[in-house]
Length: 367
Image (cartoon, rainbow, N blue to C red; front, side, top):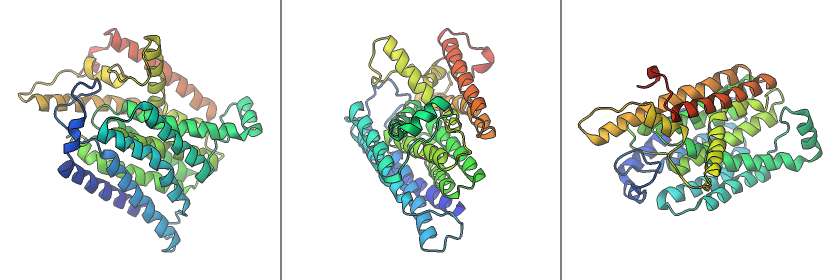
């Protein structure tokens, strides 16, 4: 498993370096008037390509190790891991196409992530077996297609949730890395080494990307990177629950409550204002932290000043994420407690959001 991670990290880091050095010309397509733009200059947005390459090499090496080299790590990775890559491709390629052209509408990108969900059901036989609510579990048992529909919804929606929180250097990447490692930890606890290997490789590839993304901001993940993270984590979350009855379905829900609730809350506040959910704005939680909590940085160079302030935003959200990851890892089999923590996060998020909007943030939080 360590060897797979090393390969995934090196491939992703080298691919990212190549993109930074040789593929900067496409970055000018991303207009200066975009509301979610918080940097100066043209920065490549093809980090998703580096991520996909690192993951593909890591997973491919794991399959070869299991099938051709005697499986010395007892990973038990079969050709089904290639099915994961095939399922990821529509979403990943759609995101990369958007990063290169800025012309792929939200409708088409949602259709492509939905296609990844359909492939996950057809190729991997994924379905949500239980929810933790007896009445709904009885319905899932009577109508298995509902569990498949939830898989399609999860794989279609989570990539867009990661895309929403991908606003500052290291933010979405570190959240994805933390979630992957948390999922891998529980997978190892229940003896699912194959799933853990896929997740650790994904975390390592993310680390290779972060070498160029944080703190220097030389490469962005873009839609492609967010869709890769969302797709892998959605597949892993459902697989972990489906293959291991001891794992509560609310364990991955609590791990991912930040990007999921950010998405739902964004849809709500845009609907209240009569705005389409597909229209980008600058009112997400991380953007408010950037504007109203992170203090300005004094530097003679404007680009350097913006970069330094950008980098100070992400740690706030890393800490916010850890507030859900720690209890999720500690109580991964306790459904009622995990539900309670999800509710606690939602309440905390809403209170924090309105406190920032109303300028009622304690002075010790403003750095």
